[in-house]
Image (tube, rainbow, N blue to C red; front, side, top):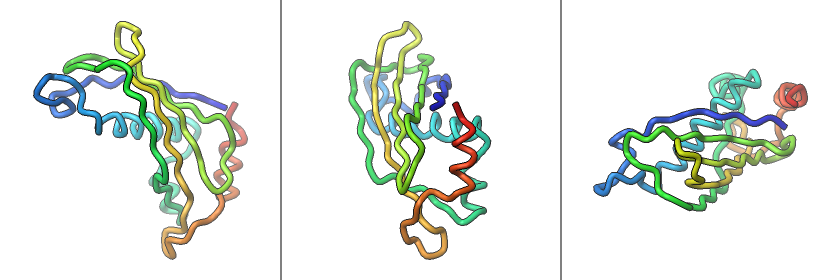
Amino acid sequence: MKSFETTIRVEYHHTDQMGIVHHSNYIKFFEVARTEWLRTVGMTYAEMERRGVMMPIVDVQVKYKQPAYYDELIKVRAFVDALPMARMTFRYEIHGEDGREIATGMTTLGFIDKVTRRPQRAPQWLMEVLGDVE
């Protein structure tokens, strides 16, 4: 399926005292790429929630390879390899402005009903939007 790449400048609040991106921020960088990926395929989290569907993260993995530094431009790429069923999995790659691999990761999101908070399958309207993505 489709991938999406975005560029993020590492800001001061992303870093620790050493000027290195704090490990927790990589998950936030993944979220930026994931939400922008959805936007490019014609869907937003806001629209999904208006339609009664929420997507909580049920699993996250990060492999830290090299540090990213304050004021560096990083490229975050999100990939979706398969249509979702009850869960949707995204893969990520983060590269520095010099091309070095900084981190890789994965998030798995479930689908839940906004009102009942009960798990559900991916809604048909989302499957139709994603089915048009190549």
